[in-house]
Length: 129
Image 1: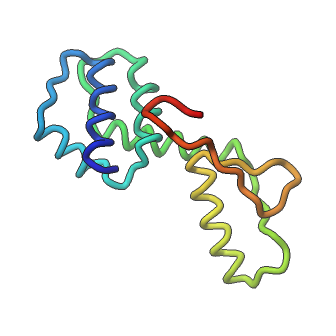
Image 2: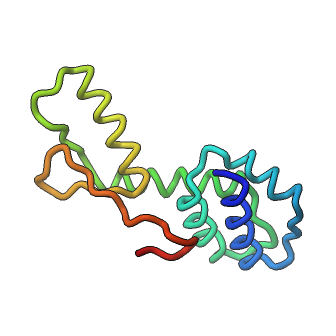
């Protein structure tokens, strides 16, 4: 996540938690704390967490919720079958990449082997094509 994306996440946080103070240092700190989190996942996490009562949201809460979201995506997907003809090393590499992509929200249709379908691109925060 870059600084601009962190600012978007914080704007959504403040929409759910109006009392939460945000300044330029907050944006910088949150960018550092969430630098390895996808903005789409962070925004989804804020939406989930925003439904609960509380005064503030923290980067740690968002990180925990993102882990839960990604794990749920993997559990919902179930087993992933790699394409035929790969060596063991290629299969491990393919599976690592596939699990990451499924965690990112991409899908594999039942019965298909080795092909992931990407999610629609994020064109503006909160708006998909």
